[in-house]
Length: 507
Ligand code: NDP
Ligand code: HEM
Image 1 (tube, rainbow, N blue to C red):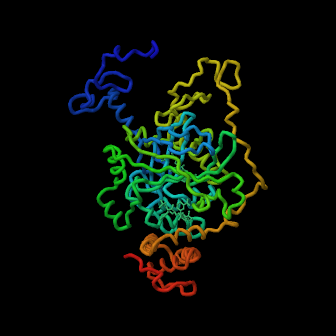
Image 2 (tube, rainbow, N blue to C red):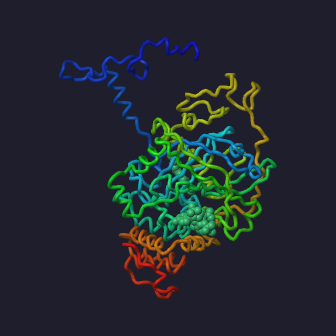
């Protein structure tokens, strides 16, 4: 501590103080002229209290506003260094991390047990900087072009006139965007309402890249498989839970970590050699597709454990800023268009939501030293001086930090004319949802049909018909199962199955 800052022992005030450190003599009664008032403008303690309260909220996240988080540890148990030189993946390495789960559409006060995709956002405090993997509990997403994200999100948020959620907007958009079918099938399946965040998987979802010590590139997908097992609610069960508590996830996660029942996930990767990307039958950078396990089996990596609650929810969970742009040496991006869009969107959102130097907040600050030249701006409370006041630009002659060429990635081959390519050309939107549909047993299918029918309540007929046309293309049983759940006549010309194969939907 410098001579300018007195040592705590030099400060005699131990009780309540103003934010400027002066003692407060009365925290119960305003300063008034006479017992009945009025209040005096000079009561600066009252002014400070009211003014501070006016600023106690920051904008909520534009999406994923409702969330639950905890700190944990990533432990590496298997050697994947042939694929990546990232230090976080050295065998035996333990890296502290933060995980924030969330729902996508609901506001901060939304009920936890709603049917929605869940966010699975991780920040690993590695020795070479923070690595953020900002994924979901699903391996795919609704869109494959970032241009469509704001449109898609509007369909999930409130209607501008009614201020209500709009199933019509949702099904209108989905039925006009068949690339969403895969994610919609997962969302409407049993896994659409996990009982709490510990009973679901996490996925990096995008294709990323690994760079190894020989500077070779591999494509990679990340998987986090729950050790707690999958557990989900039906629509009816979730309605009961929400009637009892809107905070069921916060209660479950906070309680488990507090009790020492630390939740764990098996960490796995799928690896694709760089040149395979031109050979697969699907675009491996398409976010609406998985890499089938039989083509690219999962490789074990380690274990993720959550083991510490935040001391202050606002400071550490609400102010947490995760961004897919945060990568570290050995981990890189891919041509995935949605990932490319997200590389811009998150840090931009953080500058708006939290302020210029959001990365200096303790929860976001790397655990390794930072050396950069972004000095001024709101929240400049941190110290990254280079020991010389003349070093505020680069290049300089005063020993300021400089680039390190050895961290450069190998060049990425890119070909083709710059154009606006129709992202629906040459992409089959039905094969992979069909593979998933075929995994479900009769009861799972019945619940899927019932969930979709319930979600279509109040949607105009022409939109339902357009959506059913897509479900028919996935599988005739799929379209007809939904028709039966909607109490509509099944479509005989596409029916290829007997009556037993289309189960009666659950009530
Ligand atoms: P596999 O039979 O090897 O894998 C099926 C996968 O489906 C398992 O990972 C399983 O997860 C998962 N699964 C089961 N029920 C659901 C559900 N309701 N929602 C989401 N995932 C579920 O087959 P393939 O690799 O060939 O993939 C077939 C289909 O499985 C894909 O089209 C995709 O929809 C889905 N899937 C595939 C993944 C992949 O990376 N290949 C990852 C997740 C889903 P678990 O192991 O946790 O039980
Ligand atoms: C949050 C944008 C797609 C997962 C956010 C936020 C924005 C955003 C602006 C709020 C950030 C903040 O205020 O801190 C976008 C855009 C996308 C996109 C523009 C596509 C172009 C995705 C995808 C996934 C995802 C594909 C998962 C695979 C998340 C998660 C959060 C989030 C988990 C919450 C992070 C947290 O807990 O703080 N997104 N998103 N998003 N997004 Fe996306």
